[in-house]
Length: 294
Image (cartoon, rainbow, N blue to C red; front, top):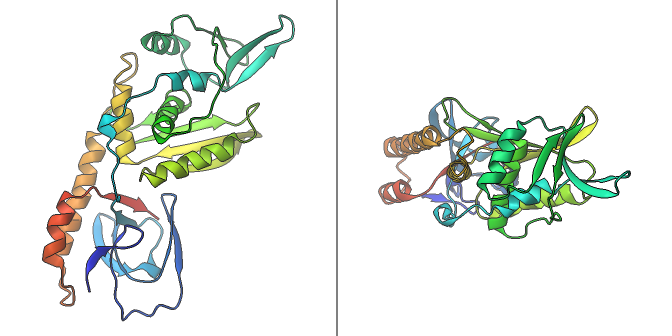
């Protein structure tokens, strides 16, 4: 038996002696897998265990290694995606016959939004609140859904700035939640948002998503816990001096601690049939690992 990353890039031990009677399906942080039974490393209640995959339970985390981790250091925020998000909702004034853009059900401080537009060098765009929503004037842009992975990331960050909440204590970013209302906009937008998440998953960036209804209004929800994405967005957030500055030091340290605990667990594992323990340990120390939750 060997410790290895299986066809789904999960750290496991394939044992030919295990009965292979059926396939098992799981969704791990929206990463869907289907595979036969095997021994798999799981993390729960601050401890690692080796269990059969078929016994994977709620709340357990598994070790995942991206085939080719994306280099987020070279990525830059495309400020045009900020305008793209602002152009998402469009209305028409029947009295003046003038088209305008707006943000529905939006209660953020427009002083901060104006400051962000100034930072991005768009001071000509005007923002004002009305009784029902926030009106955007002098925005000469038509919404276009981004196509590339790089544009998807800038698009997602712009969504987070306008419709999101950066969560964590003492400026330590722990997660980002985004609630985007799906009203008066392209009918295909929900499908495009789902496909965007799937495409980012292909480069090993994981985003939880679901559609919910609040007061009869359809809301598309994102939740970002992926530490690589959080680190990237914290870096981009630092471009805006009018926003609270965030860091990912805590979540990075937590990820490192869990990884070190995994390495210690393997070092202490006493299964004589494992033939490559000494070879896999230095490899694990140099790999990027993510811990996906079931």
